[in-house]
Length: 198
Image (cartoon, rainbow, N blue to C red; front, side, top):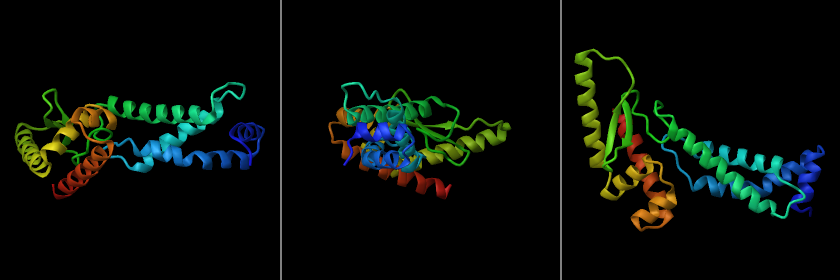
């Protein structure tokens, strides 16, 4: 069986089977890293795609003459690619997805500086009457969200929407990463259920 360096060298000389073998060998690592990140409103496959892009970048930029093992380099590249996608998504303040959950063109869920989950109006021109109705609808949705989420889930969502990673949230709340993963899964399901009813 060829080692990573041999596969990379063969792949760079046009051997597609070598590249496929390398990608298959590290797809589990990419999947594991992708699962440690979560974007509300995005699918796991979207995050996995970013991880696979990171893996491909590792293949193309790995220094065959260097001392670093490809596994170490691949881990770093995959993680950076996913983190970069998360940061990029968090910077797009005008979008309803990414770190926020779309509320069917009514607004977005986000966390304010007081650690409270709040709602942001969608960027749309409303008449005074429409603004009043829109505002009342958002307040109603906010009450439903707060009612649907436990206190722990509200804290997790607030920190997540501020851009904290799974491990940072786990550290702040003194729980395991798995607890955060489970909480975000529950939150996503609850919010999606509420949105369908709006």
